[in-house]
Amino acid sequence: MRLTQLRLHQFRSYEELTLMPPQGITVFIGENGAGKTNLLEAIHLCCLGRSHRTSNDRDMVRIGSRSCAVHAKVKRAAVDDEVGVRLFAQQGERKVIYVNGKTVSRIGELMGHMTCVMFSPEDLDLVKGAPQGRRNFLDMLLSQCQAAYFYAIQTYHSILRQRNALLKEIVKGRADSRSLAVWDEQLAKAAEPIVTQRRDAAFAISEVASEHYAFISKRQKEHFFLRYQGSLTESYNPMKDLLKQLEETREDDLRRLTTSAGPHRDDVKLMLAGQDMRAFSSQGQARTAALAMRLAQIDILTKAHRETPLLLLDDVLSELDEGRQARLLMRLDRMQTLLTCTDISGIHPINPSCVLTVKDGQVFD
Image (cartoon, rainbow, N blue to C red; front, side):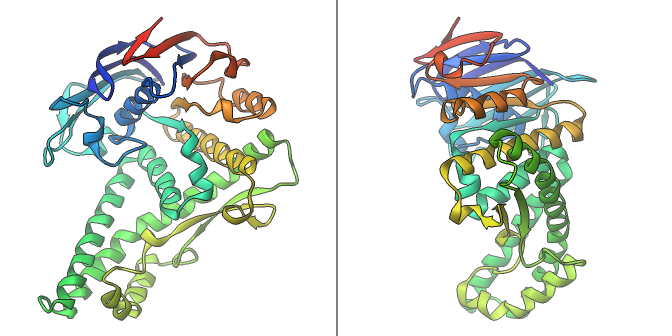
């Protein structure tokens, strides 16, 4: 997959911008705050319909503007695709998604037309952070592999919100607790494909990431692997087992006003040399593990779509020693790459196709 054109209108720090990145590596150089990451964020938005760094779409609209738009053209193995996203500053206005010149009604229809993998300094949270970040890692990967998963996770969270709302109504005396049975059944049914696919994905990632970790770190004895962890991890019938768990935890749920069982509570445990990395890993080990997981993400997306995704590197090479940097780049030379840095000397092993300077919302040759 190759990005041939990126257009921004009133997006973040950019009033208007058109880029036509070449095949190979494009480097964006600029000071912190110059707007380099905004460019990668725009590409991520076109791939997944959301930012990688904010949950509020209004944050991406240029200050003083009513809306912003991002449009991208990609050349794929079989077809050429065009995708776009328009966001609005006013609360309540829904984002608009475009695919090949037509407005689509659901974000899921955007999935797969343009895929990317982003490496960023925040990736350390994959190892050291809260479980939600690791769940999101799996969910975004699976959504890019197939739109059906994106719809499945949307459905699950919609039912979860309604069940939690019902818990509050029951406690207030405005609803009958017997009505929970209906929502329990719907939630258990919606959970089944999520648990099954997350579990399979975690196993597939572990198989590939383990080898990537060993290559980048050059420490064969530090065996790295992932383990999907949750109340349904070993279940052969997630729907039946979750339904039972929801019944058993009903009194607790009514007391806490939240649903305590289900895949929204699951985690991915990262293990290195037999120890939980969240508690015991060093900064270097955590960074290497995060890189290995992103490389595994590339492999899985490439297999799913039979072409490589776009690679986005947001100021991550400067965090690595020369050895790890060189070994990482050896794994990334087969795809179009867009990366940011503050100083070209920090990425000396790279032979870029294009170097662009970013300053004050503008990009210069």
